[in-house]
Structure formats: C-alpha cells, structure tokens
Length: 459
Image (cartoon, rainbow, N blue to C red):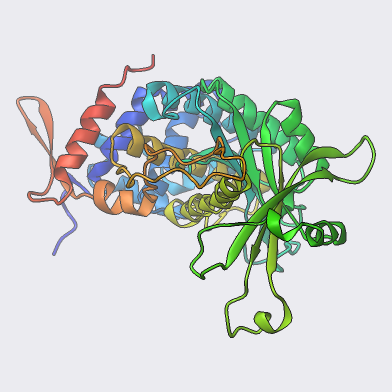
C-alpha cells in the first residue's frame, strides 16, 4: 500500500459547495470586507478563510485538521489556494474583535446574495419566523480568553448568541460572548441587526421572533416592538404568573393533541408584562397545562405542570402554542454547528481568533444550507394539516407551510454528497473528475451541481 497518487480527491463532492461559493463571489467578498491591517496574517485573507470553510464542511474541528484539503488533488475542485494549518493559525490569531465583526458583514452580504440566488424563503411576503437562542460551547483549561469563568451550566466555555431561520436552521446572525455572560446580554442590539439582515435579504412579510425564558427581558421585547416584529417568549413561573394561572376558569381551557388522553390543554389571557404601570408591556399570556404521567412522582404532588409564554402575535391559543413549541427545532441547528461543522471546539487561546473561527463556521454551515436548498437535496415533508383553530376559529400566522422542507444535517450532506472519492484526469487539455460507479446518490448529486452552476455568477 502506498500513499502516492497525486490525482486522487478524498472529498470530491466539495465541488458542489465550492461552485456555489464561487458563484456567490464569497472569496472576493471576504477579501473586500476583511482588512487585518498590518497583522502577520493579513495576506490572502480570502484563500485562508475559504480553506477553513471547506475544511470544516468535510469534518475538520481544529486548525490542524485543515491539512485534509492538501491531500492529493483536492485543491483542484475548490477554486482557491489551500493554506497550511500553521498559516491558518497565524491568520486566525490576527483577528481582533473588530476584525471578527468584519466577518459578520461578510456573512450578512453572503446571505443577501444566496437568497437572491434562490436559497431564501419560499415567499418574500409570507410571515418569517426568527428563533433566538444561545448555547454553551465547553472548553478545557484556563488559557482561553473569555472562557476561564464558569457558565450557568457550571462548566467553563463560551456562550454565543444565535439567531436562526425558523424553517430550515440557517443561521441569520451569531456573536461570540464570554462564558459568564447572562443569556440576554446584548440580545436587543443583536436582534436589531438580525431584523435588518432579514429585511436586506428581501423578506417583506411580517417578522416574528421566538425565544426561551432566558430572553424574557423588557429590552428584548422593546427591540421587537421598535422594529415592528411580533414576539413569543417563554416566561418563568413567577409568583404573579402562578396567581394569574390559578384564576383562569375551567371552561377557558381548550384540549390539544397529546399522547395521554385529555392530558394537555391551553388557554390565553390578557397580560401586562414587566411590572405594573406605563413601563410594562400589554400582551397575552398563553398557558399550556399538562397532566403528569400516571404513576410518576410528580403525579403525587401536582394535578398539572404549567408552561407559559407571552406574545403579541395574533391567533388562537391552540395554534400559537403549537407554533411556539416549534422553537425547539432550532436545537437541530445548534447541534449541527457543534457536530456538523467545527464549533464543538474553539481552538485558540485568543478571543478574537475564536470569534473569527465561529464566524467562519457559521458561513460554512450556511453554505451547506444553501447547497441543500438550491441543489434540491432536501426532501419535501409529508403535507401537514393546519393547526387546530382557537376558540374564535382563527389560525395563527405562524402555521407550518405544506411546502416546508426537511432539515438535512451537515453530517448527512457530508456522508452522501461531499465525502465522495474521486480522481482527476486530463485529456485533450481538459480536466475530468471521475467519481465512483454506482454511487447511491449520484443522480441527485449531479442534478444539484447542475442547479448550482445555473446560478448567475456574481462579479
């Protein structure tokens, strides 16, 4: 056995996302927007950034793993120079926080271009849901800036913010924060930037934001109201919330589908959040009550467990509850960021380098989403009927569209469409990429690449 073939390509399927990146002008966009001044890694920022993006798409989760792109003839399918891991490390360590914000600008413009090319929402005038969340990225040791203190989960790490499209897990915005940051820290300004990105992408319909109880904050609600965005935020069961729930009459509860017969109901009441007086916010409190599982310890202590959220989105409580609970789908995207691309590790000791690593991984994640959507790789879900109407017979604006497509994880994309072994041959001064015969997803890969190549090239 010899490792001696210079014409083999270990991950030949990278030609699909690389072609999409080329048609979107991603490398040129990075070179135009990112200026590292006189830092040691200032040269060829586009080539270095794209090396990271393509490396994490094929499974790299550290700087050294970028070496995988230097094997065989892989560079021939990428359309850019592939740099050594040592060079990538110098490049990442050249980033300050301000330089990482330049990559935010790249991500925003790349989203605009991708959506214009067909990767955006199905209807620009349709309601668009934004899921707000944060996640703890655990680190080890005491040498990482911003990650030496314990997070709220009692581990050391970083605590970035994420805003995701509610339909397919595309990351609309991200921001690295120190591990000890409160969940809602900086969320209001972060949301304002997210709303601007979505509008810049051509979405003209109503915007709605969902979040868990960590973002139950007057500043977050004010940011939504200022931008004309509907909100739906989980509420912790404070004493005043408990008191209000106890006053809901029995005939106000509406049964909802649940695995346990007559096991769950919802109700809605008018609510004044964030204290009395003019500084509070008028909205609705939607409450779901669930019977404990028969035989469980909770069944000995309580008749129901309660889950509540505040909202100003129009609709009946049954449909709104179903729509709000769909916020949990954003965990698929967070899992994909950690285990599909390279955010299970933040590899540097410098905060700026890790902020750049996060931004480039988010770009890689979105490039996989756009490849899936434009290439038609995602499959149609079975048609779903509309949510059950509320007491007045109306349906929420946020109901699931029958045209919604399934979430295709990056590791699935990698296994089926990127990690394809290939060989490059030259004949009559023309390069041909030969791929394995009887590859199970060959036809779908070919049609996806054809659709990507049909996109108008950004110049």
